[in-house]
Amino acid sequence: MSISDEDIRAAKGRVPLAFRDPPAVLWRKRLLWLAFLGLFAWCIYDFNITPERIWTGLGRLGRVLSFMFPPYIWKSWAEFSEILNGLGETLAIAFLGTLLGAVIAFPLSFLGAKNINRLSFLRHGVRRSYDLIRAFETLILALIFIRAFGLGPLPGVLAIAVSEVGTFAKLFSEALENTSEKPVDGVRASGGSRMQQIRFAISPTVNPVILSILLYNFESNVRSGTILGIVGAGGIGFLLSDRISAYRWNEAWSIIFLIIAMVYVIDWLSGLIRARLIGKAEGAR
Amino acid sequence: MSAITKFAAPPQDIPEFETEFAAARSKSRRTWLIGSALFIVLFFFSTWLTDFFKITQVSMPDGSREWRWIIPAGIPRLGEYIAKTIPVLRWDTLDADMAEWFWRWKTWMKLLLETVLIAFMATSLGVVGGFILSFPAAGNLTPNKTVYWITRRYLELARTVPELVWALIFVFCFSVGPLAGVLAIGLHATGALGKLYSEVNENIDMRPLDGIKAAGGTWFDRIRYGVVPQVLPNIISYTLLRFEINVRASSIIGYVGAGGLGQEFRTAMSFQEYTDLSALFVIIFVTVVIIDYGSEKLRHRVIGLGVKS
Image (tube, rainbow over all chains, first blue to last red; front, side):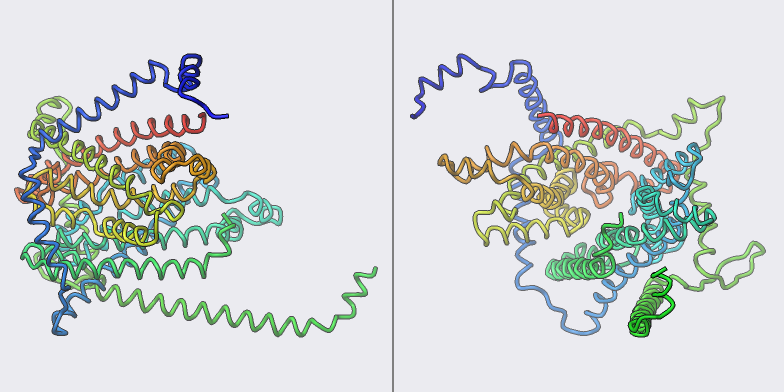
């Protein structure tokens, strides 16, 4: 038994809504698409995007991309050690920034957790202040710290540390809230004080989660650490923006590939550490 | 009774257990020691690289110079700087003070609109690119291994290089202005969204696809009628989330000349218009909060609709 076109037409006549949206939904969809396209077209007009501009831009982009091959290789150790130092600085910025942020955020996170801080007005106030800290862009923070500490990697460390305080305090306090009450009851039943409840019941269950958050944010900070140098806060970003503004594209591309390689290695290493330290304890959440 | 007698005569395997326990204990202690040593080495190496414990000369209040650790030495300067950015607002002359604080509001509003539009356009480009590439980049939908490998590497390249670096490159190619910012953020968003979308694609139910294949559908038919209806709610939710991120990104991308409010940060810094910095921060903060709130509401509605249907 096969269905002919007649049958389909008959079915469409009988139950039109099975084949098509009701008119109200249909019109709403059309209007949304029209608004979207209108806004997009207006953007193109407002940003003065002409085919000519795109064409010349693509031509230049092609020239820039052509510097990728053959890849630039640093001849002398003096040149290459500068690049290595930049990569090391980026990693050091990410490492110290993450560490410092975590050390400051850890005690603060207890204030934001529902099962530890029972004063709801204080808890909400603390949580809003985490949100406020997170609203600062790392790059803007770096600009501010450069004013106080001078150019170099130190402002980068502090910028990452401050923006991570907000993130970590939020994530840690959520991790604390996700722990089970049962171990706490156990410690309390055997006469443990509030501090002992936190130390022996909550802390063992949240430690793996905190470690996993730390590793994950370290990875993301390695990525954001690469751009801090563009405003002068040290690391590989400084060398990269320097090469780009000098139009040494072949060197710039090699630096970009080194950054990508570094990010890969860090992701892989932190995956290994995570699997080794936390792998089996993931169920502890 | 029997339990007591059991304890009274210790079984043979207790000494064995004791040795095993001691071995495990010393092993974990050794791991702990090695881990801590490694951590300390890493810590001091990175403090050395980043000048964290640098001792620097500072001026004391009485005019003399002293050697101090850089961090406590810099904090007063930081405080001074932040104090300078805070505007003078008096209750009696609030209107005039506010007008002075936001004295460039006409330019700023125009640039704010530009910032949001850059984010909008970049998100649209990122969605189109990420959506198209997410199908060849999903392990269960890809037509063949070569296409899969190429799209995956392309997406990784696009998202590993930060927006700001793409912006530096595009500012050179497409000249200063919002076009460079749109392309830079759009390219980064393509990489990030392509990865998220392809992960969504990998978690779908494959049975509808088999049905379409059995009815004679091509690869495109299978994607259009088998995959898209399943992933659409997730895609819309990720897209709105990306829009929030892109608004933040486009607010700083102007720092390298790629359009939006970021260029005002640079101007205010170099002209030492300190109160402008706080005004700009307030503008961006309020915008980001409004957009986050609106998109959260929309997202919840979309997810709710997705669950219902």
